[in-house]
View (cartoon, rainbow, N blue to C red):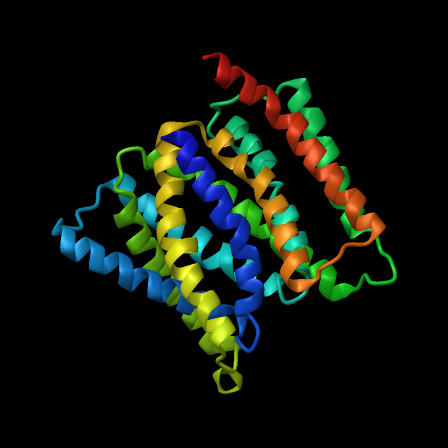
Length: 292
């Protein structure tokens, strides 16, 4: 079951980077993200109503809802959508793949549930070096690209913090309830942010961005987040975050095939270095898990 959930989450979220890019054509980022989760909330709410269970929250449930609503569905997705107006979907996915390193650090120094071995430290250093290479200026580098990359790293930090929070407090929580309330809070904050900072009069609807929004709402939100938080209950948080090693590969391939996105030599070297660093830091954890 864990392997199926891991594969499902990875493949869906690998494709969402492309869908976000397509959905942003004619759509402001905060509005696009807010409408995505508003649709998802309606779908999950209908399922919960059909199931007929009351929304009773424990103290731990409330912590998880706040973490999801603020860190993931508001800060994380606002940053990701905003960033994809400035950088390619593949580059955004690769930068987000630093999430396992951030998760390992939070697990060690905040939750104190993991040990930072020398190999993990080496992987972190290599990963940071790769990120620095991505920031290295070339003829296509500018302030907007730097801001987009910084926003993606901020999104990864928010997602990592939420992951270890859910791992600690959400073991007995219902993932549908958490997603319903968390997405509802996040959607409300995203739409409020959009109302304050974006113009809705310039929105242009098309079959492409409408299809992308529906795909993101159903598959990228309802199904993927259900699988993700079920997976957190089964395996360690750091191992769950390893999915971000595969997600950039899916995103880069789809971005290349459908959008013709390319990366320069420096960016390509930085991408490879980040992935090597993440692999060096995390593979020992996978080996220990397999032996168990």
